[in-house]
Length: 339
Image 1 (cartoon, one colour):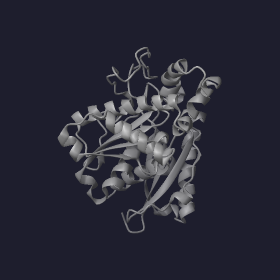
Image 2 (cartoon, helix red, strand yellow):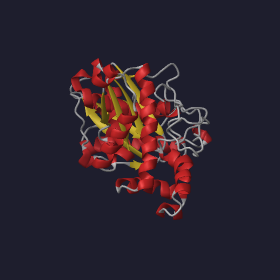
Image 3 (cartoon, helix red, strand yellow):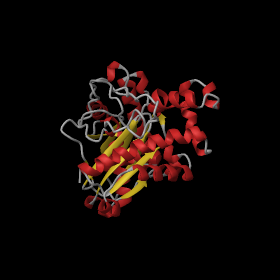
Image 4 (cartoon, helix red, strand yellow):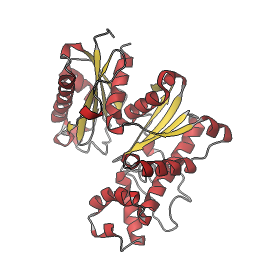
């Protein structure tokens, strides 16, 4: 990159799209005070969503006072699963439910719209890349990490030597669909959780908002039939569980203990595959309040089985700046592609 060049990172989600600008020195030019989100229009189909991404880029450049001619590359992330080239899974995805999205090449479409090279990652990988670089800084290339992001689904990313592990089909790091051992995690009479992907007992079926709606809350409300959430529609009640958890509600804490336990079992698998330097946890559940995020991370750590040597070498931490992590990770990926 030339000293005056910049790259743009675009974070596309199911409902919101945001963007950031990264200069040649590695400085992000949009801080928290100027962070913005616009409607992603994903539900309107591919063409309106691509326009929303372009709008987010233009807004970010205007906000920073940078002319479009200085932008040399764009990083894009979307929810997965998708190929390394940015083709949305032909099986569909939680956040891309319309058939028009299935098999859609979102990276190439945005590249054609902007007339700039576009580097693609799924949103979990982008957030994982940002968490890794923030935590390790100048030593990022010397370390590895695994990140789990609890959202509507369960996103994730695997970083090795400071770079995203993509896999042959670009779907490495789809940690939500890793099936875990559920004995001792579920209550004795609790049905096996199922995922929209068809897998029984995968991580997303437990540790996600979808998992709360589909599996956890319907069960726990049978154990606590007088709970205030029992009088609410299930989808609305699921969004209120976190508030009850922060207030120390017994039922909510049992539910979140199961989510943390699922992540711990996922990280146990990761420990035996990649033996990472760090395990990162992100999502609304850990950003809600400092005390609750710390409690949840402690539960994840306690549920992760590591060998003594691994426990001494690895750290557990929260993904920082999660509302900006996707865009910033995407910008980092774009910058690394041209330097």
